[in-house]
Image (tube, rainbow, N blue to C red; front, top):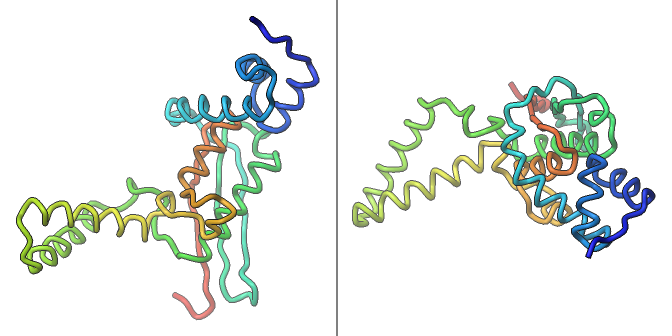
Length: 203
């Protein structure tokens, strides 16, 4: 049985999620008119298609900054999207600020794992394999240990792999997961283009 969806409900859902008219209407019909369930429907569908949007050009966006209390540490980040409309939304700008705040804390070195130079990965693997070998574990166990430690190292240096410093607020999600959620809500390709961190007395 088809659910009658009012124009006001569609408008309200679009304002909360940034979804298109047809997507919002379909989500409300699928959820039986329940707005909260419709938001979840849009989120799940959006995450599934986020990868497909990855190749679309993200030429709009914002530069956001964060200065830590006392003015000793600061960060700037460029977050891009596909349209100026999304770039101006409160949700998008709040995400950019949250990323800048995060960058100021754990001091990531790279945006994504793809940005880590192969030479750095190879050097890290060599050290990890030497450490694992010195522990006297069987060969197959050693490799599992190495891969686990490599994953941990990447979490330490790669922005998208790090849990946001405010784990309670963001439900222990990584920056990458928060970006995917935003892409799902907006229907656009979201790219953290670059960042810079500054610390008084640093290099």
